[in-house]
Length: 172
Image (cartoon, rainbow, N blue to C red; front, side, top):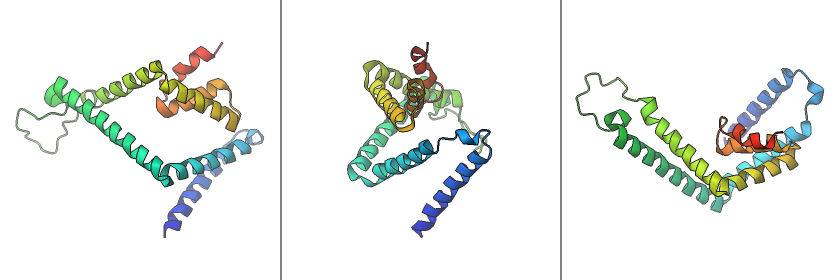
């Protein structure tokens, strides 16, 4: 039965590609080489990330580090904001179904922590090197320009809001 999951995923991929092709306004301009190259690259990366034991162990370590960051952000929010940040409530809850989750005080601290960490890694250089290397790889694989490659590769690590800010120095 594991083949059924694979076939379901393959069918979903074909459906999405068919929908994209069907609603395209300029079908002759579609670069099939880039699409096939991207699909092959995704399959190879997925196999590399899930089947190589050393990589699986490294990703497990990274996931453990991210968990620690999340717990640190939660602890910091509880320390600063008390029960509003997710700590123990100093009073009895009359409605147990009511949510005590406050987005601004429980999620935003984690977002700020990740943003600060990304800024530090960019300033120190490792994130900059990874983004430039992946931009070069995207340029070679898909024939995209430098700014497009930088923005796309930065989206992987930073997010859709921050990544265009990295392209600004590359534009005239």
